[in-house]
Amino acid sequence: MKLPYDITAEILNQIVSVSEKLGEINSYRLSRPAPKLRRENRIRSVHSSLAIEGNTLSIDQVSDVFDEKTVTAPHKDILEVRNAIDLYARIGEFDPFSISSFKKAHSVLMKDLTDAPGEFRTGSVGVVKGKEIAHLAPPGDRVAFLMKDLFSYIKNDKDAVLIKSCVFHYETEFIHPFTDGNGRMGRFWQTALLRSSYPVFEFLPVESIIKEKQQQYYNVLSFCDKTGKSTKFIEFMLMIIDSELGKILLTGTKILSSNDRLAEAKEKFGIEEFSRKDYIRLFKDISTATASRDLKSGVLSGNLVKTGEKRLSVYKFK
Image (tube, rainbow, N blue to C red):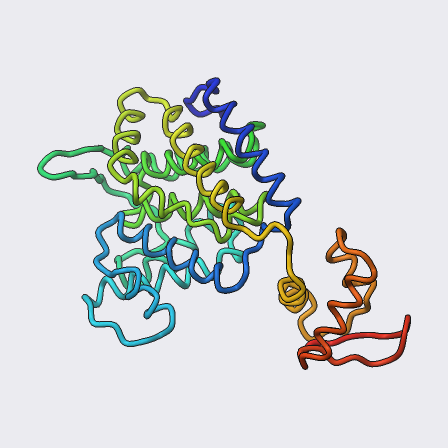
């Protein structure tokens, strides 16, 4: 099934730009940020996606909930944050091409917040902005059919996942498959789709730019509703993705330090033993001498335990 959108010169140019940045990010080994930055980006994603929907917690309060500290705020808003933190933490559990997985994710996001978490709506629903109905969603008896077609599209269409993820995001907003939580699910599932091909998107806070451009976001959604095509929404979201990838390249450390490499190695090997050869396989652009210096530094600092000598040496993180 081909959904209604056009591939414009703007989309093609953005795909090229995004692809080039993804290539640079991979070559500089920036696809997995340091643990502290991953935490900060996850908090930004959760805060921004919920704030778009009217959640009142500040980013500092979201951080406190993340750290399981006491926060004084409406119970519903705190519960929304807790559920969203749980959802993003479990992103690797969901199959982005599965309807049942999509429903499961919604049940995590909306636990204790709606009467039927994880279930498609059967009644009618409209999106109200102010005193006007901004969007009248398709009838409830059409939802299951439309979502089946949407998942068939992302599984089988030959267009790039960068495009399909944007289309899925828009169509989720248009179909409004659940009674509540549709915007949050559209943004989260786009991330899940992108992550399936590009790991860097797991910790990329695209939601924060959407929050900054919230009115434009709604305007583009409204324009696409009126034209019956998601073309402008694809252009808008690719622009946002390109911007966030650019920030990674602007602020990322292009040459990893010894401590950076050891921290990444610890995540990779855990408590398993590994050799210098294994370490070099992980960091293909370093020399044998650099690997030896890194490992020696880890032993001297007390982070690594070394057994054996010379070529028979093996290492293990404490």
